[in-house]
Image (tube, rainbow over all chains, first blue to last red):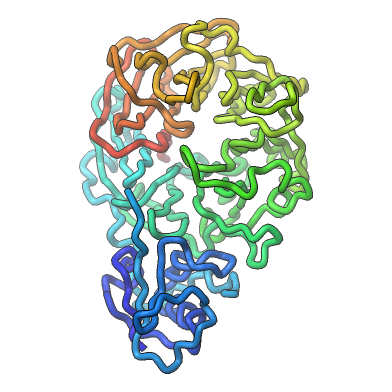
Length: 86
Length: 404
């Protein structure tokens, strides 16, 4: 499926805003993304498996907070940088 | 749970190089043999290149524009490997390495991280401090983090592992600030990792807050080392831990001597004593002895520099009365002299704990970076100062790069 990549993470995708990755859940999708773009997962998810504060995952317009959420039948997953001040 | 192995990058042929945009391209003057300063800032990495007289400096960079570069250090053992601790406002923390002074970079394939399933549920928020390991252990480095974890690499910064003896010490939850806060100014952090040049197993570290701790077995076990040190913010007049060291330095030529700039004063400790002596009591009363950095003369164990700040009232963290000055002792803290020739008469900035350093020159060069984005230097041991760079982002760290 297509994964939309926010600008802070595009250093890992060679500048690509949209990339392909596969997985049955968000977690598997991030694992596959990391295989294709080494290092990208640790900037998104911490070592305890929690999404970092300033990254959000969107599934068909819904914000996903649980990485075990199934995504197998989706066409697109959107990673965004969350709004913060300063 | 994403397994830790996920973070081990196995760079595939054809995969994009995520560091391509981080290079420092303007090399004119940078690849010569003159002195270099590594300046980590809130918005990227800058390199200052000086002539042999250390009188003219050019500024190069930024590399990693927009990244928070907390610390940048060139490996003193090989004179080549440059490590930087980086994060951004939006991305997690990591470490990058360069073999050619910022021309090219590689990200650590296993950055400092607590173990998945960690008993405290800790995740590294920032890699705060880098210390090269012992001279006899090439490729070894320590990293201090926020929350207050300690990590070690033995392959020059490519793969990092938790120092379990510290991170999982039965007293860690009592010694450390946990749950920690990312508050004013930068949250709780582990800093000032010092390796005894006589013994790689003998380590010191500082927790801000939490105190000074010592290990004599390579980090397997630890004990507090805070006797004699004030902690005005605690009810106990001489508590075993809970203090707030800001910067701790072991003297390279006399490793039984430690200097500390603490939240509550300037101290010296001469081992085997375990009682710190408050040498800041000898500072002028109207200046006080609060500050962040303490920097040492590389050869003379009696000489050290501090940068006092206003720690009264609500802790403005600016120079006392807005009059920036370095103070130097040449008698191990029995007396102090003000060194402000060349510094502005008025200035409302200060110097963070990693943002001051000395070189190995004779006379010794002393350098510091300010919260207002200037780098200042003295090549006469603090007698006179000149501004080496200005209009940079807030400076977090200044280190001398001793190139091979």
